[in-house]
Length: 407
Ligand SMILES: Cc1ncc(COP(=O)(O)O)c(C=O)c1O
Image (cartoon, rainbow, N blue to C red; front, top):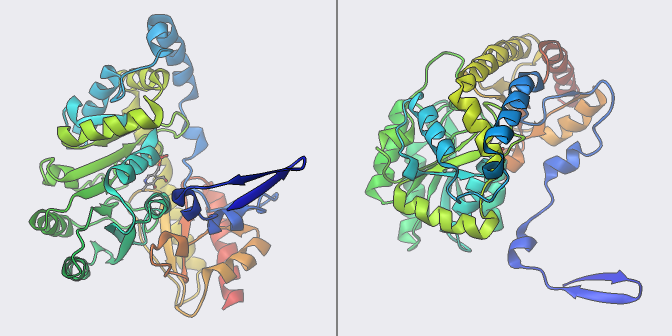
């Protein structure tokens, strides 16, 4: 029980179990006092700001107000504005994924998708499967519900399938039914790893045999530097047993908070009911602006610009890593997305290097919080989408110095 004393009156607040499971983020605590001049940040997962299409959005906003102002400023349908649903289905089609408007529910970005997912499937102790490492916001959303998160190690091709099978067997033997398998198959946050086609097929086969839904979180899918995109789990499974989470945060901008869930109709119906109790609807104004933006063909241009911008940044980070990092440090080689995943020798702790890195005016995110089993103390995530190429080169040099000093 918490006590707050105000003007002699003592209020005893009885907080929910959910709120008690929310712990202060170790990463936020570390990043708290790091806003000093000259600091180079590989910290957040922010898109490059200069890519934001300010002019286009300004023009379209006025257009939407003039033509559909009353609709834009009104409450809207919970699954989303029809023209937005249509634009989203078209967007997906361009990447090989077919979904009908009835299979889509617009969300206030993917984090709400994760929230709705947790609300729909999770109870205390409910077992779920996720990658080691996985998206921090996912770990937090699932932990909040008291889920029993089982981590599956990954190699360059994604989840270790044998390990996955053993974990599922163990859970089954204990009489526990896994609620879902959560994966980020394309250019994963935080590891940058893309799941191979063979693994995708194996994963879906196992999930189908055991009747476990697969959640495909897919914010980075469109950001491929090679032009190559593997078929999504949604498509491989022909829309059955897969729930896909999508967002504009990384391919366009995060400020309008627009994402969407793709799932079979019966599930969308359930998500919609839950969403009604959460926020009634995602802002119609934002949806109409983005739907118009997409209809005018501007989405494609923006994504192409993003790839043009991130590809050389990724190459610059790789080059600098090879040039400056000491032996015994290894890193992933992403072909899309926004992140490098770095492994220090097992004996090292990325938190110790962090203190030294701050002294060298460079920062990153420690890897442990991305692990649902609290492992990964020797890992770190570096973002390359936000800093400039010059900052990437200088920042990696500084980081390598910090690593050497801590060694
Ligand atoms: C894998 C993954 N899922 C979901 C999100 C949430 O993004 P948003 O809520 O901005 O759509 C992120 C953001 O970094 C992410 O990396």
